[in-house]
Length: 259
Image (tube, rainbow, N blue to C red):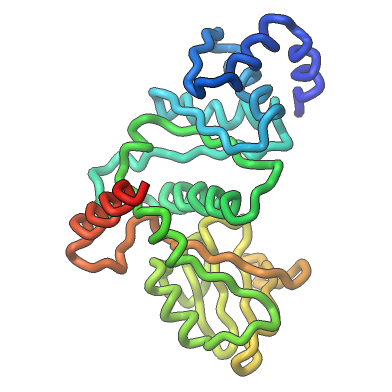
């Protein structure tokens, strides 16, 4: 169900239109008081008047997830995605469920795609203060460990598998969950965190012949060949080794100095 038609009618209300105007005025920090039940509609109205990504920060995890669902009803043309809290101490990768980790990396991947190829359908991200406080790798590090593949390009299959391992992907006999890959012969199956379906990358010698989605249940490929952007499978730069925390802190400090 979509309420975008109702949203257009609400936009004609003087109170709502005034609040929307205030939201876009400078200085960029504005305080707009609005009842809880109308917040999803207001955020969706903001999204309809802006092509920029929007981040909605709440105090509770359940409320952030609920916001993503509500906004999806009001603004179906803008993807509303939830950036969840892992609810574990920083850098404790073993305690994070694969589903939550994949969802968080998926959001980072969507932001990366928006940064590289701006789209009018920029994402609306709902999250909590606690989820935002977790230490992430710097943007430059995330970009440096992303990999672009396209049919017709020359790529070394063994080098691609080595990069996948360095990016945090787990080698498995059969791909079933995000963050996994499987290699057999001239084929690599990969399930990226920011994709709904895994993909099958088919090599012919050193040439990347095709990239197609496939159903992990039937193992049948479908759809047309397409380029692929592989983001890291983890939000923590595990490739930095045992001095991970120190190296991350140094990179963030360097980024702050550069700004």
